Image (tube, rainbow, N blue to C red; front, top):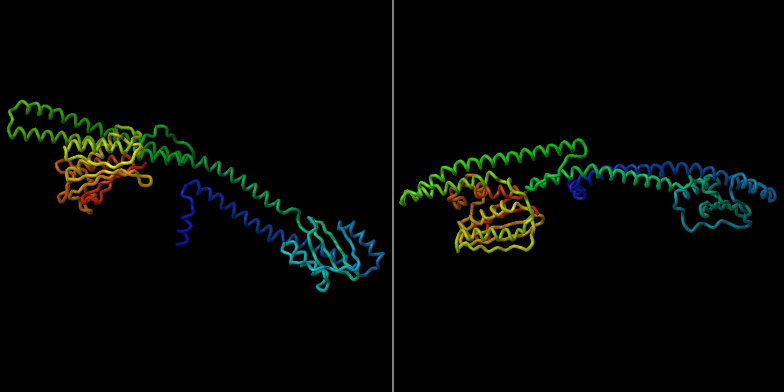
Length: 441
């Protein structure tokens, strides 16, 4: 199991790289098997058969040298050289000098073994290379017989060409496979980019299905899904906008009627209730609108956060001055108005429940992070996720939705997720709550 995990670490993560391995691995394995069979089995067998014929010729020439007189031997050498295509030379009185090292080549080893079997273990001989040919020196009774054998009589001619052609053909096939594989993987990569962009709330207007049938089906399913989601968001927004408009009309009449009435405690309470209802309607509409109604555009995240912090600070008076620590030129493609509302909601919650609030902007890997911290009572870790539920108010401890509709954090998280990010709650170094918006860069 451990070895399997260690191998996976070195495997490519992309579809193109893994598909390429599926193509390359069988080719390399096949070449290895074919090379082994050709060189270790086929070539060795062929070489030994050819060497056996050469050894038989050498044994015959040695026997002729030992059994005939000098004049006859010279004629026999010329006849053998003409018929066998060998270069034969006799060196009277010379003896074979043992080679400095043992032969290491497969052909040399085979030739030595078979010659020794043919002429006997008691006779000295030596083999060596002379250019592309083989030289065989053998002791005879009165000298040394030097025989130069052409290469094609001992082994197949230029076996390296076989490997060269095999490698070249494999490289050509591999290049063709890479070309076609690249064209097959490109539509999948384009579909993945389109889905990622749509998940971040960015428009994908020019996406069209192409490629293999299965990829086209997946792309068409994505287009259909995108259209259904956009239609659902539009219908939800239009419905809530209509409801909001219909409810605000009688509320406006009630405000006008109350404005004409004399001020007293009951009238003041009714005015506050109407203002609260208008605020709740605005929250419902913002929550329903979600990710619709605005296109993404590049924005300086630090500048956007400073603007939102200043607006939230003004809403809370002099005590609401919020320090912001942010780098320069952190450009992210966002829905500016929606994200500003998300940041404002978090800062507003922090100012409601803490006397000290700090905002920081940073970048971690491929994410931009906006952290809003305060020194308020915080939220129990077991109930932090519960705080994001729409229309839900915490009963104990810190209530981030106090006096509101119960949609502040729900709207903020909805906006963050519409950008492909999220909001998480944690403990703050100031002693209260820390809300972190994470957005893909």
